Length: 360
Image (cartoon, rainbow, N blue to C red; front, side, top):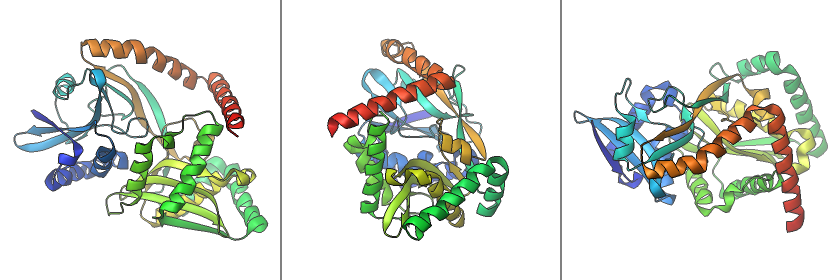
């Protein structure tokens, strides 16, 4: 096994085609965050992005996208944004994870959305559900399933959708938009949501804003940005920007105008998005790991992702353990306990209200 490490911009057409072929051969890898385009676009705004190319007998058998930071700390590309992480590889690949880390110049590789079943998953890790909407039998079949498992949600959302139309005008849903102005409306809402709920504003980081803008411009058979928006008249109400492969849509940045909050605009939008996505050939919407009420209401099942670290016996790995592992364990304890999770969420929202009032 030979391992070479390159920057994403060094991947040529043949390497990209091989990556796509490996991804297409395994349904478990059908996620846009694992597509070559995502890593390549991340490399345009993140100089620390790298790809390890695994070759056996002259054939490329795997790709490992990652970021290399100080002290040899490794993270997935666009760490903190990606809801699916891992290697793209041939079936039954055999390699040493520690040799891979060494070849990549990594003391440790930290992950939080590594696909369960990946050859990289170490013995010690935690597993977490990633709620999904199954559209393989079409939108009508999904609605019938939703009526059975979450009938109250479907009925109340349908009622609020009709009431929204009566109160403000006819609803319109634009799907597959490539308008940067519409994207800015959505990201402004998202920024407001982050601040309101006490979270860090991702769009305060220029590289994230640039990455999202660049991804919106891509629209190919195998990969693209996916922007849609629900309107009443000409007024935007709720929307979403995510990524897609040919058959999987990854939920990423949903947001809405809080002036319409009593109508549950997020639920109205998600049902509208699911319908149009199914018409466009999407068979699965992966809403991503996270304890969110709307995900529980809309999901038909779950995929599984893992959180943990792969470490070599180096000083850098030791420093990483001291700084990160206790914090991650404490966070995991809070998220696993509903009472602690709700208390933490309330504290963040209180902080957000104070921060917003001081800034106004």
